[in-house]
Image (cartoon, rainbow, N blue to C red; front, side, top):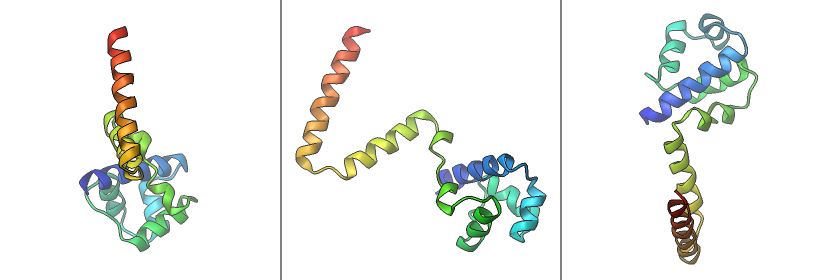
Length: 113
């Protein structure tokens, strides 16, 4: 959960700055203390659903956009999560095929290096 809080906070900061809002301005619109916005952005606390809705509205985004922070993740973590999502939806036969393809690509890449 701490990773989620951290990335959510970074995303909210990114969107806030894109709107050219200070933490104080966003806090006023959301009706919370500016220190609370700071704590959210630092990943120290997770806002309630109601607060998330008010933040999204204040930033003129849909709430789901607050969680679109893949570009903020280290490449290895983002890649790992993407691979996990792909494998989640695959049945056993598809996983076997994915494994064979991955092995073949890995061999091809390592032999060229």
